[in-house]
Length: 74
Image 1 (cartoon, one colour):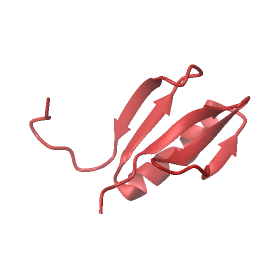
Image 2: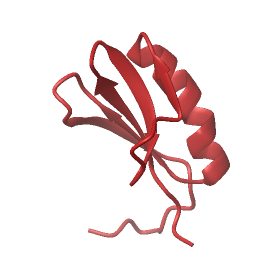
Image 3: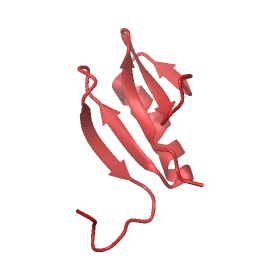
């Protein structure tokens, strides 16, 4: 089974932690920092990637917590 990436995304005036492909948020917080604090251990536990989006919704940062291929693809 493929690992689901964990996304931190803007949701109105708040920030949401959402698993890839999920509509329902795992958590909704007041700040992006709070959302990242919640999302990071989830991504580590699932050995997946943490994808942090900016206020414009575009990807701002990615952190991989799973086994990476070496050398990297691409």
